[in-house]
Image 1 (cartoon, rainbow, N blue to C red):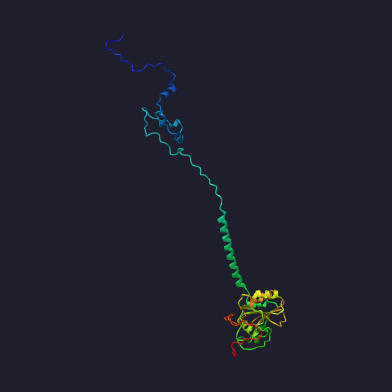
Image 2 (image 1 turned 90 degrees about the vertical axis):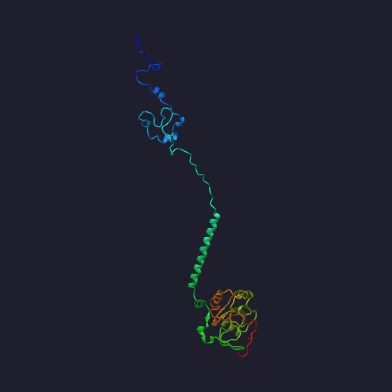
Length: 304
């Protein structure tokens, strides 16, 4: 029975439908009682993966709540979950390999140019080497078998500069030097089909020409072969010469070579060694001479 003035206050506790077992709190109920964090507040999987170095047990605060969860009322203490910069983000783009074929055209041209340049340089170097080691024309003359050097056997007959008109007599036939006509025979690759005056041919030798003579009965193919060595070459002349003791005879001032055949290699050796080199007047020309044929000299300057 209540006493007067004993006022009972209504209980504010809600009747519990079920009694809580005395054994201890129910884990499931405790989890349900915790405030739930909205899905959008949860950190991204990538962020959780990056911060996963901490165990779940160590991630709880002193109050027993998971770190980063919202407090009661649904608001977070910060500005929201911070996304880690190391998240997956956009997947890297795999570079596309483009198959390129080698362009062999320019490479071949470049290689050819290099080979050509090396060849040109090598050829030039070889020519310089040969020029520096080339024997003198006097040494070449000594190497020609059968050549007669009258500077060694008859030097007195080779005095140059003596001019005389009319028919002259020579110790050597055909003559290789000595007194001669004041006018020379033209000797710029001239091929005469008839005999020419020997007195004027000797004057041509003084200027440095090689005079090729042959017997009139020499076969035509032999004559043509000789002509090919004379035509269009300066300081060269050719003519038949009756009475030769050999089919072919070559003359330069002071030198002579007689052979049997126009294909004899010594002919070219003689021309190469002595053409212009045997000159007694280095500045003299082979042009502006006479071109007339015949055995008798043409005296254009009587008494000179």
